[in-house]
Image (cartoon, rainbow, N blue to C red; front, top):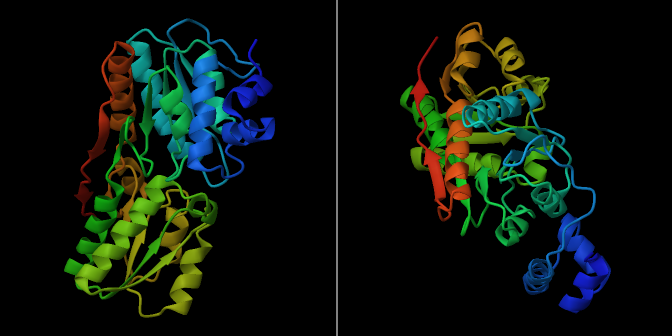
Amino acid sequence: MVTIADVARHAGVAPSTVSYVLTGKRTISTETSDRVWESIRSLGYRPRGAVAPAAAGAIGVLLPLREGVNVAVAMRFVRAVVDAARRRERDVLVVTADEGPAGVLRAAESAVAGLVVMDVETDDPRVAALRACPTPSVLIGVPMDPCGLTCVDLDFFAAYALCVDHLADRGHRDIALLGAPRSVYERRTGYAERGVAGFSATALRRGVDFVVRACEPDGLAAARLLAEHGEITGLVVHNEAALPAVLAGARSRVDVVAICPDEVAQRTKPTVSSVHVPAEDLGRRAVDLLVARIDGAPPHGMELSAPVLTVRD
Protein backbone atom coordinates (compact mmCIF):
# COMPACT_ATOMS: atom_id res chain seq x y z
CA MET A 1 0.00 0.00 0.00
CA VAL A 2 1.32 3.41 -0.98
CA THR A 3 1.77 5.77 1.99
CA ILE A 4 2.28 9.50 2.41
CA ALA A 5 5.95 8.78 3.10
CA ASP A 6 6.22 7.03 -0.29
CA VAL A 7 4.68 10.04 -2.01
CA ALA A 8 7.03 12.39 -0.14
CA ARG A 9 10.13 10.41 -1.21
CA HIS A 10 8.93 10.27 -4.82
CA ALA A 11 8.26 14.03 -4.89
CA GLY A 12 11.41 14.94 -2.94
CA VAL A 13 9.53 16.74 -0.17
CA ALA A 14 8.77 16.22 3.51
CA PRO A 15 5.74 14.08 4.48
CA SER A 16 4.26 17.16 6.15
CA THR A 17 4.31 18.95 2.78
CA VAL A 18 2.29 16.12 1.23
CA SER A 19 -0.20 16.41 4.11
CA TYR A 20 -0.54 20.17 3.57
CA VAL A 21 -1.16 19.65 -0.15
CA LEU A 22 -3.84 17.06 0.64
CA THR A 23 -5.60 19.09 3.31
CA GLY A 24 -5.16 22.55 1.84
CA LYS A 25 -4.48 23.86 5.36
CA ARG A 26 -1.25 25.62 4.38
CA THR A 27 -0.26 27.41 1.18
CA ILE A 28 2.29 25.44 -0.84
CA SER A 29 4.02 26.82 -3.94
CA THR A 30 2.48 25.86 -7.26
CA GLU A 31 5.67 24.11 -8.38
CA THR A 32 5.85 21.94 -5.24
CA SER A 33 2.11 21.24 -5.25
CA ASP A 34 2.23 20.13 -8.90
CA ARG A 35 5.16 17.82 -8.10
CA VAL A 36 3.27 16.25 -5.20
CA TRP A 37 0.15 15.71 -7.31
CA GLU A 38 2.23 14.13 -10.06
CA SER A 39 3.67 11.70 -7.50
CA ILE A 40 0.20 10.95 -6.15
CA ARG A 41 -0.99 10.22 -9.68
CA SER A 42 2.10 8.14 -10.60
CA LEU A 43 2.04 6.04 -7.44
CA GLY A 44 -1.75 5.66 -7.30
CA TYR A 45 -1.92 6.93 -3.72
CA ARG A 46 -5.35 6.93 -2.07
CA PRO A 47 -6.19 7.89 1.55
CA ARG A 48 -7.32 5.16 3.89
CA GLY A 49 -10.86 4.90 5.17
CA ALA A 50 -12.87 5.22 1.99
CA VAL A 51 -16.53 4.30 2.37
CA ALA A 52 -18.17 2.28 -0.39
CA PRO A 53 -21.55 3.47 -1.66
CA ALA A 54 -24.56 1.21 -1.86
CA ALA A 55 -23.86 0.27 -5.47
CA ALA A 56 -21.12 0.59 -8.04
CA GLY A 57 -21.62 3.42 -10.46
CA ALA A 58 -23.00 5.79 -7.82
CA ILE A 59 -22.55 9.55 -7.96
CA GLY A 60 -20.68 11.23 -5.11
CA VAL A 61 -21.68 14.72 -3.95
CA LEU A 62 -18.97 16.65 -2.11
CA LEU A 63 -20.81 19.26 -0.03
CA PRO A 64 -18.77 20.45 2.95
CA LEU A 65 -21.23 21.85 5.49
CA ARG A 66 -19.03 24.69 6.65
CA GLU A 67 -19.85 27.82 8.61
CA GLY A 68 -22.14 30.11 6.66
CA VAL A 69 -23.51 27.43 4.31
CA ASN A 70 -27.29 27.67 4.11
CA VAL A 71 -28.30 24.02 4.42
CA ALA A 72 -31.81 24.62 3.06
CA VAL A 73 -30.39 26.19 -0.10
CA ALA A 74 -27.75 23.48 -0.49
CA MET A 75 -30.36 20.75 -0.15
CA ARG A 76 -32.28 22.14 -3.12
CA PHE A 77 -29.26 21.38 -5.27
CA VAL A 78 -28.73 17.98 -3.64
CA ARG A 79 -32.38 16.97 -4.17
CA ALA A 80 -32.10 17.89 -7.84
CA VAL A 81 -28.94 15.79 -8.17
CA VAL A 82 -30.58 12.85 -6.41
CA ASP A 83 -33.72 13.04 -8.57
CA ALA A 84 -31.70 13.21 -11.79
CA ALA A 85 -29.42 10.38 -10.67
CA ARG A 86 -32.35 8.16 -9.67
CA ARG A 87 -33.88 8.59 -13.12
CA ARG A 88 -30.63 7.15 -14.43
CA GLU A 89 -30.75 4.35 -11.86
CA ARG A 90 -27.73 5.65 -9.97
CA ASP A 91 -27.37 5.96 -6.21
CA VAL A 92 -25.95 9.10 -4.61
CA LEU A 93 -23.36 9.32 -1.83
CA VAL A 94 -23.33 12.71 -0.08
CA VAL A 95 -20.10 13.60 1.75
CA THR A 96 -20.50 16.58 4.08
CA ALA A 97 -17.12 16.48 5.83
CA ASP A 98 -14.72 19.31 4.98
CA GLU A 99 -11.70 17.21 3.96
CA GLY A 100 -10.36 19.38 1.15
CA PRO A 101 -8.28 17.62 -1.53
CA ALA A 102 -8.01 14.46 0.57
CA GLY A 103 -11.79 14.19 0.46
CA VAL A 104 -11.70 14.15 -3.33
CA LEU A 105 -9.30 11.20 -3.34
CA ARG A 106 -11.23 9.44 -0.59
CA ALA A 107 -14.51 9.77 -2.49
CA ALA A 108 -12.89 8.56 -5.70
CA GLU A 109 -11.49 5.54 -3.87
CA SER A 110 -15.01 4.63 -2.72
CA ALA A 111 -15.82 3.45 -6.25
CA VAL A 112 -18.17 6.26 -7.25
CA ALA A 113 -18.45 6.71 -10.99
CA GLY A 114 -18.30 10.50 -10.79
CA LEU A 115 -18.33 13.48 -8.45
CA VAL A 116 -20.52 16.57 -8.13
CA VAL A 117 -18.56 19.21 -6.20
CA MET A 118 -20.33 22.05 -4.37
CA ASP A 119 -19.49 25.15 -2.29
CA VAL A 120 -16.68 26.02 -4.70
CA GLU A 121 -14.17 28.66 -3.62
CA THR A 122 -12.34 31.08 -5.89
CA ASP A 123 -8.99 29.45 -5.00
CA ASP A 124 -10.50 26.07 -4.16
CA PRO A 125 -7.79 23.68 -2.88
CA ARG A 126 -9.76 20.73 -4.31
CA VAL A 127 -9.23 21.81 -7.92
CA ALA A 128 -5.75 20.28 -8.27
CA ALA A 129 -7.04 16.98 -6.87
CA LEU A 130 -9.99 17.00 -9.28
CA ARG A 131 -7.63 17.50 -12.21
CA ALA A 132 -5.32 14.73 -11.02
CA CYS A 133 -8.09 12.28 -10.13
CA PRO A 134 -9.22 9.87 -12.88
CA THR A 135 -12.80 10.00 -11.58
CA PRO A 136 -14.88 12.45 -13.68
CA SER A 137 -16.32 15.47 -11.91
CA VAL A 138 -18.66 18.42 -12.38
CA LEU A 139 -18.57 21.53 -10.20
CA ILE A 140 -21.69 23.48 -9.24
CA GLY A 141 -19.74 26.70 -8.94
CA VAL A 142 -16.73 28.20 -10.69
CA PRO A 143 -13.17 28.56 -9.35
CA MET A 144 -10.78 31.25 -10.57
CA ASP A 145 -9.16 28.83 -13.02
CA PRO A 146 -11.76 26.46 -14.51
CA CYS A 147 -9.33 25.13 -17.15
CA GLY A 148 -9.75 21.39 -17.64
CA LEU A 149 -12.91 21.26 -15.51
CA THR A 150 -16.67 21.08 -16.10
CA CYS A 151 -18.55 23.80 -14.21
CA VAL A 152 -22.19 24.91 -14.09
CA ASP A 153 -23.64 27.84 -12.17
CA LEU A 154 -25.89 30.86 -12.33
CA ASP A 155 -24.08 33.87 -13.79
CA PHE A 156 -23.91 35.67 -10.46
CA PHE A 157 -21.95 38.62 -11.88
CA ALA A 158 -24.80 39.23 -14.33
CA ALA A 159 -27.47 38.48 -11.68
CA TYR A 160 -26.19 41.17 -9.31
CA ALA A 161 -25.75 43.55 -12.25
CA LEU A 162 -29.37 42.98 -13.22
CA CYS A 163 -30.52 43.89 -9.70
CA VAL A 164 -28.50 47.12 -9.70
CA ASP A 165 -29.85 48.11 -13.12
CA HIS A 166 -33.38 47.40 -11.87
CA LEU A 167 -32.97 49.72 -8.87
CA ALA A 168 -31.17 52.41 -10.88
CA ASP A 169 -33.90 52.33 -13.52
CA ARG A 170 -36.43 52.94 -10.75
CA GLY A 171 -34.55 56.10 -9.77
CA HIS A 172 -32.55 54.91 -6.76
CA ARG A 173 -29.19 56.69 -6.36
CA ASP A 174 -28.10 55.16 -3.02
CA ILE A 175 -28.24 51.38 -2.75
CA ALA A 176 -26.73 48.58 -0.70
CA LEU A 177 -25.98 44.89 -0.97
CA LEU A 178 -26.80 42.59 1.94
CA GLY A 179 -25.03 39.38 1.05
CA ALA A 180 -23.90 36.12 2.57
CA PRO A 181 -22.57 35.64 6.13
CA ARG A 182 -19.07 36.97 6.74
CA SER A 183 -17.49 33.50 6.81
CA VAL A 184 -18.58 32.92 3.20
CA TYR A 185 -16.59 35.96 2.07
CA GLU A 186 -13.63 35.12 4.30
CA ARG A 187 -13.08 31.80 2.56
CA ARG A 188 -13.65 33.49 -0.83
CA THR A 189 -16.61 31.43 -1.99
CA GLY A 190 -16.88 31.83 -5.75
CA TYR A 191 -20.52 32.87 -6.19
CA ALA A 192 -20.23 35.53 -3.48
CA GLU A 193 -17.10 37.10 -4.93
CA ARG A 194 -18.50 37.13 -8.46
CA GLY A 195 -21.71 38.69 -7.18
CA VAL A 196 -19.97 41.51 -5.34
CA ALA A 197 -17.88 42.19 -8.45
CA GLY A 198 -21.02 42.44 -10.58
CA PHE A 199 -22.79 44.64 -8.02
CA SER A 200 -19.87 47.04 -7.64
CA ALA A 201 -19.02 47.29 -11.34
CA THR A 202 -22.62 48.01 -12.31
CA ALA A 203 -23.14 50.56 -9.54
CA LEU A 204 -20.03 52.40 -10.73
CA ARG A 205 -21.23 52.23 -14.34
CA ARG A 206 -24.64 53.63 -13.38
CA GLY A 207 -23.17 56.35 -11.16
CA VAL A 208 -24.95 54.96 -8.09
CA ASP A 209 -23.54 55.28 -4.57
CA PHE A 210 -23.35 51.88 -2.89
CA VAL A 211 -22.49 49.96 0.27
CA VAL A 212 -21.69 46.23 0.58
CA ARG A 213 -22.35 44.38 3.83
CA ALA A 214 -22.14 40.76 4.93
CA CYS A 215 -25.37 39.59 6.55
CA GLU A 216 -25.93 36.84 9.10
CA PRO A 217 -29.14 34.76 9.03
CA ASP A 218 -30.78 36.92 11.72
CA GLY A 219 -30.92 39.84 9.29
CA LEU A 220 -29.87 42.38 11.94
CA ALA A 221 -27.32 43.84 9.51
CA ALA A 222 -30.21 45.45 7.62
CA ALA A 223 -31.37 47.52 10.60
CA ARG A 224 -27.80 48.60 11.40
CA LEU A 225 -27.14 49.47 7.76
CA LEU A 226 -30.26 51.61 7.40
CA ALA A 227 -29.61 53.33 10.74
CA GLU A 228 -26.11 54.26 9.61
CA HIS A 229 -27.06 55.18 6.04
CA GLY A 230 -30.42 56.90 6.01
CA GLU A 231 -29.87 57.89 2.39
CA ILE A 232 -30.21 54.30 1.15
CA THR A 233 -33.46 53.62 -0.70
CA GLY A 234 -32.64 50.39 -2.56
CA LEU A 235 -31.47 47.01 -1.26
CA VAL A 236 -30.17 43.93 -3.07
CA VAL A 237 -30.47 40.91 -0.76
CA HIS A 238 -28.73 37.62 -1.45
CA ASN A 239 -29.35 35.77 1.77
CA GLU A 240 -32.42 33.57 1.77
CA ALA A 241 -32.33 32.88 5.51
CA ALA A 242 -32.18 36.60 6.37
CA LEU A 243 -34.69 37.81 3.77
CA PRO A 244 -37.84 37.76 6.00
CA ALA A 245 -36.05 39.69 8.75
CA VAL A 246 -34.64 42.18 6.25
CA LEU A 247 -38.10 42.83 4.81
CA ALA A 248 -39.62 43.17 8.28
CA GLY A 249 -36.96 45.66 9.35
CA ALA A 250 -36.74 47.71 6.16
CA ARG A 251 -38.53 51.04 6.03
CA SER A 252 -41.49 51.19 3.64
CA ARG A 253 -39.58 53.54 1.35
CA VAL A 254 -36.80 51.00 0.80
CA ASP A 255 -37.09 49.10 -2.48
CA VAL A 256 -35.89 45.48 -2.14
CA VAL A 257 -34.84 43.03 -4.84
CA ALA A 258 -33.68 39.55 -3.83
CA ILE A 259 -31.57 36.81 -5.37
CA CYS A 260 -33.36 33.59 -4.39
CA PRO A 261 -35.60 30.86 -5.79
CA ASP A 262 -38.93 32.16 -7.11
CA GLU A 263 -40.92 30.19 -4.55
CA VAL A 264 -39.10 32.00 -1.72
CA ALA A 265 -39.84 35.44 -3.19
CA GLN A 266 -43.48 34.50 -3.69
CA ARG A 267 -43.87 33.58 0.00
CA THR A 268 -42.66 36.90 1.40
CA LYS A 269 -45.08 39.62 2.50
CA PRO A 270 -45.13 41.71 0.45
CA THR A 271 -43.88 39.51 -2.36
CA VAL A 272 -40.46 40.73 -3.46
CA SER A 273 -38.92 41.27 -6.89
CA SER A 274 -36.22 38.68 -7.43
CA VAL A 275 -33.65 37.02 -9.64
CA HIS A 276 -34.37 33.31 -9.65
CA VAL A 277 -31.68 30.89 -8.44
CA PRO A 278 -32.37 27.78 -10.60
CA ALA A 279 -31.13 25.15 -8.15
CA GLU A 280 -33.18 22.35 -9.69
CA ASP A 281 -32.06 23.15 -13.24
CA LEU A 282 -28.41 23.41 -12.21
CA GLY A 283 -28.53 20.14 -10.27
CA ARG A 284 -30.06 18.28 -13.20
CA ARG A 285 -27.62 19.84 -15.65
CA ALA A 286 -24.69 18.83 -13.44
CA VAL A 287 -25.84 15.20 -13.55
CA ASP A 288 -26.35 15.30 -17.33
CA LEU A 289 -22.83 16.62 -17.85
CA LEU A 290 -21.37 14.21 -15.30
CA VAL A 291 -22.95 11.18 -16.98
CA ALA A 292 -21.55 12.39 -20.30
CA ARG A 293 -18.09 12.62 -18.66
CA ILE A 294 -18.49 9.11 -17.22
CA ASP A 295 -19.30 7.90 -20.72
CA GLY A 296 -16.05 9.37 -22.02
CA ALA A 297 -16.88 12.95 -23.04
CA PRO A 298 -14.10 15.53 -22.53
CA PRO A 299 -14.43 18.34 -19.96
CA HIS A 300 -17.25 20.65 -20.97
CA GLY A 301 -15.78 23.89 -19.65
CA MET A 302 -17.84 26.58 -17.92
CA GLU A 303 -21.61 26.90 -18.45
CA LEU A 304 -23.39 29.84 -16.81
CA SER A 305 -27.17 30.24 -16.71
CA ALA A 306 -28.46 33.69 -17.68
CA PRO A 307 -30.31 35.43 -14.82
CA VAL A 308 -33.99 36.30 -15.04
CA LEU A 309 -35.58 39.03 -12.90
CA THR A 310 -39.28 38.99 -12.01
CA VAL A 311 -40.84 42.24 -10.76
CA ARG A 312 -43.36 41.86 -7.91
CA ASP A 313 -44.81 44.04 -5.11
